[in-house]
Amino acid sequence: MEALVWTSNHKLELCEREEPQIVAPDEVKIQIEMTGICGTDLAVVTGKEEGVPEVIRGHEAVGTVIEIGSNVDRVKVGDRVVIDPNQSCNECYFCLKEQPHLCTGSDGNGMPIAGLNRNGTFTFFYSTAQTFAHLLPDHMSWETGVLIEPLACVLHNFKEANVTADDKVLILGSGPMGLLSQMVSKSKAALTVATEINPYRLAFAREISDFALTPSQLNQATVDEICAGHKFDVIIDTVGTQLEVAEEWIERGGRIVPFGINAKYRYTFSPTKFVQHAIKIIAAGEYRYMFEEALRFAAETPELEKLVTRKVKLNQHEAAINELIGYELNSLKVVGSDTVKTVFVP
Image (cartoon, rainbow, N blue to C red):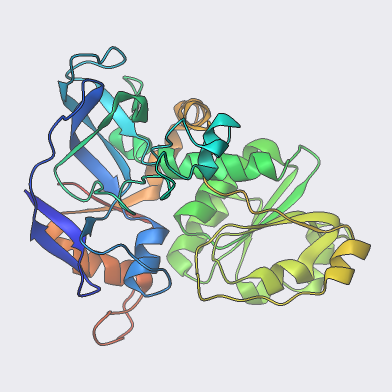
């Protein structure tokens, strides 16, 4: 079968790979219907993160069960499912402490994660233990379902940041994770403000948030007006390079949530200031028992599907990646970007 693989040439390339098979009685085989391009995939492609070579990328996916092992009792052939790519072992020190998001794997070599360190979903078929295949409601579209995994990440971050109905929340960046964060914030917080430099995505943010600004509009006069002379209680950096901005606009006693991925980014701060102002930095890690909550939220928010704005075939990956990062990888030529969430439809 064809698959998009992060090769030893440090490129995302279309390759031939063996079709996965059921190898254990509790496994299911899934035909992929839709799989999203995540910011972590873009981080690897652009050199901001290391990628494991010869692994099929992709971890945000929905599909149809086409085969089940002899012990499978949670799903049946024909069921529509969303895939949980984080295959926590339920045996290690952290799993036994009910912290599966920190799983180190039963062999101590790290949690197996589809598309990161084991073959993922940028292909036609995928097999996994039934524990990691969650039923989609009959009425839920594939477009909504493909956002369940990133939505679970967002909900986990909001829970760890203890966002309440009294909070004023600033979300830096309006890509897929930023827009999902804005939707969640609107359901939980008193005020939701967003930033974005891309006009296409800024238009989406203006339909969701109470205020959506360009970075230059995030200034003292504007913040004073919309926050009644105060700053923000919670600031979420979905870009991965905005902690200086977050520090500037966080209120005393506030919480800063680093969320975007960029391993090359470094940020220097004064611990004394953070102690004196009681400012917290909250790094939530992977989601923890969040798929069911994400499914409930998505079922009540069908407009989620509008964030899926581009569907492409696997062989169109180069153009799709270039549009998402805003430039051609080979030439560095600027490329216009009029998409929020791009997905592969094998």
